[in-house]
Image (cartoon, rainbow over all chains, first blue to last red; front, side):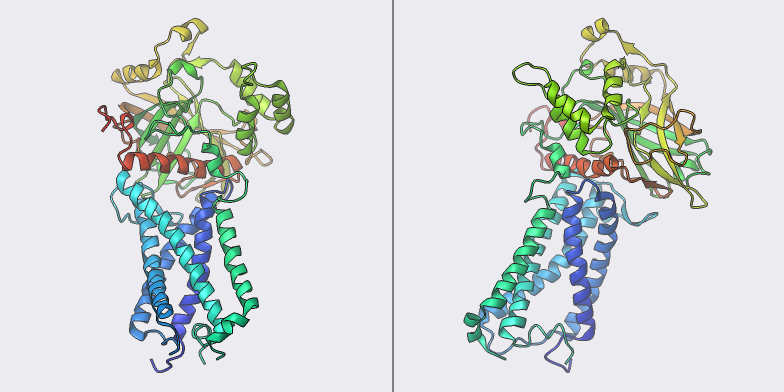
Length: 176
Length: 356
C-alpha cells in the first residue's frame, strides 16, 4: 500500500457498510427477543443479514491482511496503541464468530436457517440440546460484548476526530 | 494536529462523545427490555415460578410425543404451493398436551387440550404448528392475555375474582366474553382422540398464481368426541388422557382431516378473537394419521419448539398480533428449557430418576 495515512477504498467501503449492518443487527437481535409484534419480520432480516456480515468480513479480513492498516501517529501512547490493536482484532473475531454461532445454534436446534422463503442454508451443527444451549448462550453473550466494543471503538474514533485531530479518524473517512 | 494537551480544554466534544455513547447504550438496553416497563415477550413468562421443574415447557408442561404421517389430498395445492400439499406423504412429529403449566397436573384439572406438530417436507421446508380445542383466542391482542390473568386472579380475601376487575377487563376487551363464556359451558374431553384441534390464527396461503388467500384451519377427528360427566371427571385417573391415547393407538392409528376455511373479503383476518361465518368454503387438505405415542422425556418432540410462526414456503403470516407474539414467547420458554436440558439440570423431564 502506498498511501500510509488512509485505509484503502475497499476497506473504507466495507467498514461503513458493515458498521451500519452491525448496528442494525445488534438492535434487530435484542428487538426480536422482546418485541410482541416484530419478531417474525426481524428474524427474517436477522438470518440473511448475519450471513451477509459473515461473507463481508471474510473479504474485509483478506483485504486487511493483504494491505495492512495505516500506522498510528508516532506520539500515540503505547497503551492506546495496544488497546487499538486489541479492540480491532476483537472486532474482527466477533464479526466472524457471532454469525457462525447464530448459524450453529439454529442448526443445533433443528431449525431451518432461512435466507429467503424457500431457500435455507444447510446446517453446520448436529441437532443436540447441549450444543444448542452452549451456542445460544455464546451467541447472546458475544453480541453484548460486540456492542460494548463497538461503543468503545466509536468513542475512541470520535476522540481522535474531535479532540486529538491526529488523522486517525480521517484514515477511515477520507482518501486524501 | 493540536496535540494531546488539548484533552483538558476539549470538554465540549467530550460531553458530545459521552452523550452519543450513553444514548446508544440506553437505546440498546431499552430494546433489550432491560430498562423501561413496556410489555415484552419475557413479561409473559414472568409468572413462571423459580422452582419450575427443570426441562419442562413453561406452558402445557404435561404432554406426550407422537409420530405420524400427513397424507395430502391434493385439493389444497391450488391455494398453496407448500410442498406438504402435493407430496403424497410427509412424516409428522407432534405432541398432545393439557392446558396447564404444571407438568404434574392431573388430567381432570383442565378442559383445554392441545396438539402441536412439525411436518418437514422433502424440499427442506418445515411447517410448525400448535392447536387448541378452542377455536378462538379470547382477546384481539396479546396484552389481553395478561389483562385476563390479572382480572381473573382470585382475590386473597374471598378466593374469587374481584368483580370490579373482571368488569374493567370486559370494558377493554368486550370480545373476550365469547370465548370465556363458551369455555365455561364446553364439555370436558375425556380423550385426545375425538377432539377438534384449531389453529386459532389465520394464515395466508400463497397459491401457484401468487394469490394470497387467508385461511383458518383445524384438524377434524375421525373418532367421536368423548367427554366426562361431572361425576366421571371427579373420579378420573390423573393420567387418564395419556393412558387412553396409548391404549387407542395400540389398536390402530388415529386420524384427523385438515380442514381449511377460506376467508372472503372483509372477514377479520388479523383478529384471533373473531370467527368467520360458518358458511365459508372449506377444503380438506389432507389427513393426519397418528401411529404411536412416546413418553415426552424420550420422544423426538421433547426438544422441539412448536413455534406457529414458522411456516413453509407457500404460506405466510397474517398481521395477527397474538400470532406474532407467540414467536418470541415460545422462544423464551424453549431457550430456558433447552438450557436446563443441555446443561444437565433437568431430571425427570429427560427421564432421569436418580437426580443425576
